[in-house]
Structure formats: C-alpha cells, structure tokens
Length: 101
Image (cartoon, rainbow, N blue to C red):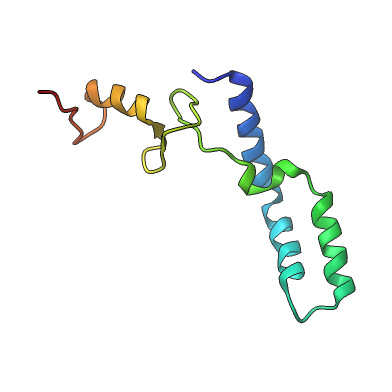
C-alpha cells in the first residue's frame, strides 16, 4: 500500500484540475492564439501563472485503484501489475487466467 498522504495529495490534484479546467483552457487558448495582441497574450500568461500549480492536469499521477501504487500501472484496468496478478489469481477479472506450468 502506498502512503495515504500521497494518495490523498493526488486526489486533491485531480479535484483541482477538474475545478480549473475551463479557466485554464480559456487562458491557454488566448496565449496560443497568434492573432491576438501581444499585450493580451502576456496578460493571459500571467493569469495562467497565478493559478495553482496543482490545477495542471500533467501533475496528476496515475495510481492503482486497489493499492495506490504509482508504477507499473495499466491504464485500461486502472490497477498495478501486482494487483492485476492478485485479482487474476482470485478469478476476479473476467476472461483472465494466470498461467502456470
């Protein structure tokens, strides 16, 4: 199991990313628009910098839903390789059988 504080910190980042997504997208559109005035683009970039760092989507870490492990994460199943093996061994994932010989 991962540290509870790390898992909660990541959940907080996800909440902030959802909260500021529209505002961040609008400001980014202004910054990347080549037709707008340079002063307007500069002001938009300053406002973007004032937003909380944890509101950026790139700061969210993919973590296992079962254990909170940050590495060896399968996106499709949202679990780590270790949790995937345990769930497959217990027969809790439909169609998946752990090989043994």
